[in-house]
Image 1 (cartoon, rainbow, N blue to C red):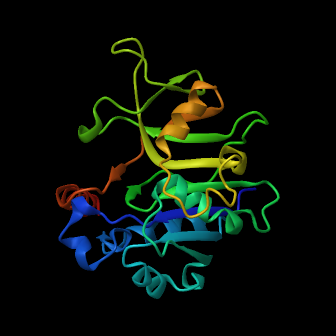
Image 2: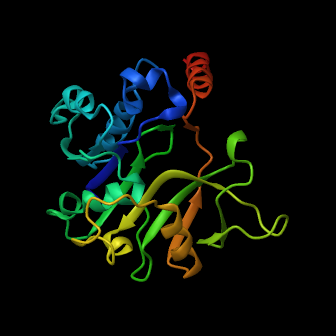
Length: 238
């Protein structure tokens, strides 16, 4: 059973300014509570209770709000990126000691802190021995119409030429084995900026990743307009 997750919460949120000048993006409110709080509620419901949150920009606000997580039925530890955000892969690598502690499976869920979704965290897939991660994909939103990846049966593959295979967008949610980062989480790579996208594409080329397409509500809350649209959509449903 997967019990560990990392919520990525270190980004500056440039496109969300001026909101993010005074508030870290994962604390921006959707349906009345912070984005990140929605994830904690769903993780606790799924029994995933050991949570790492990385932070950089205005990170102390995140620590002050969520503290040890007991209010939400989870245990939170923090991975501070004090010299500035390390990007997605860099942040995960920096937090690897916490992710592997008391984690014999060496697997953990990764969630972007700035997405909102109804995707459930129960019934996570089982990674085959030769598979390093399983990514959750979503239909392409208006801001990413060309997508990120395609699927060959259950295997994640890099996008093919136009009209040869449908493409999808990476949701920012995935189940990873630590071996995905095994050549990187060492002393030489610690506290260095490193993007996740190139690593995903390289492992997709090697057919080391699986994926599934989710049709639940999902929004990358990347601009004030998307935030307003999401809040309006949720208000209309309530």
